[in-house]
Image (cartoon, protein in one colour):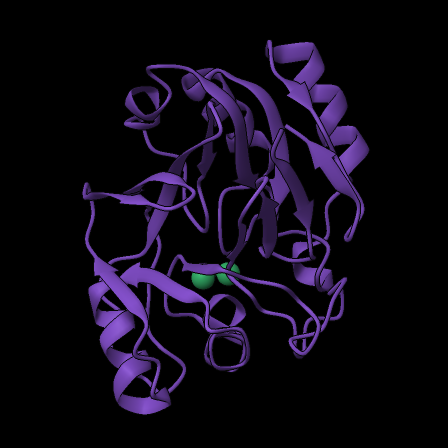
Length: 227
Ligand code: NI
Ligand code: MN
């Protein structure tokens, strides 16, 4: 059974029986980080968009572990040109790829994606994963959008949604997202890293229970959860 661990901010670690998949590894400079860039394991690194709180330590971890990076084409090109990351798969929205751990589809996200040096990162994205018979959706940094109802078709075992507000959807819109996606379990992300995105996770969980059919889970950074 896969396990999912929040490493703080929007960084998640998904472990299957044979593989470790790291999403948006912003650990250095992340006050909520549960692991460091020198300790975190990774066979694959998924990067949702170009902002520094998502690209984070990608190059450093990829060099240390040899992990393959999966991201928007503009981001993998930038990582190769500026950080010598050559083991990467560049994709674009709507595309899917079969990987050793399962199937990955790059989904829409409504956000921006400028890289730390000002280079354009293409479109931001989310990820729909099929691993060990489970379907997981990482919305990543996004506003609420109606096409989430299509992403939820086929069923979702878990959805990981931002709730921090200000830069992404907040708690209120996340409830609408859950109604469109209809996941079995839902995890909050992109909150409590800094005061501008502080949220009350337990109040959010209570509203999810009251208004939707999903089971809200609010792990502490570093605490693995079974899917
Ligand atoms: Ni962002
Ligand atoms: Mn962000």
